[in-house]
Image (cartoon, rainbow, N blue to C red; front, side, top):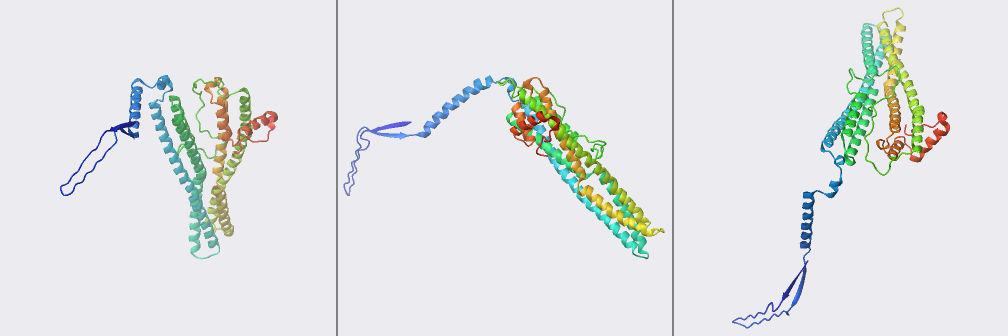
Length: 415
């Protein structure tokens, strides 16, 4: 905006003084023009126009908003419910992490304490066997009591399996964190509905059931009769119908469906069966060690009690010494090697492959394409979870189709 100023004889002054005459004549030519630019006034004018437009849109409603159907608008109530579930999930992540660290410390402290008690008792038996006098009886009684205490502690420790408890809590923290991230994604880019809220609630309750926090009453069985994959997800339900787009097949085609069927077969025949087989071996080893440790400390307690009160006192003392040493070795292998944790890891891995199979099957079973997860997105997620590229995943399906059950390759490259 420019303001034009014209001056004609703007200044013509004369100045005089009594003591001297001073005359000043200042003449400015007529019709002289000044141009002054004022950008602030221009911005204010534009802001005024924008405010008028905003007031019109706020009064009459945005044309874009009018074209959005009410069903696609974000429901504040559903958003509030999802935020409440998100806060509960974040709290569970912290709880499972803290309890997992606590139970891992249980394993270390109990292992150190029991081994210390056992080796101290074996040392006492050895000293008593090579000594004589009144102190022998005290040494034998002390070693016997220490062996009995170690036996009771071992029975309790083998029953709860602290290393396996710690692995359960680590898995729970990881899965709850994954659910927390999924809820954040839904809130950020999605349109939360009652179906999303119901699905999130079901997953929280399923995880609570799969990985309980208490030890009494609801603790997972540590020595089951058979190895079953871990199940931490709710029953697969039909997906909500998505808005109709230009892609009627929703990213799916017949070739991709065949590939998914082959991949599902590979995961079931190779990966899941392999981890169930390894889990059975770990379970048998853990059962053997869990029975051997208390048995050896019990025999050592009997040997130390009769080391000086029987015709075969030397053999009893040897039983007390050797039994205590072997019990320490067995206890170290079982809990120092964390055999229970290894069993839980195999069981969890088998559950992961079962979950992948059910996810593929639930999508293939759905006849309405718009109820399925987008085929391209689902294929990408599957490839990432199996540690493969998209081309590598398709090559696996082709190899399974050509070789059938004779294929040697596993589906997952991660574990």
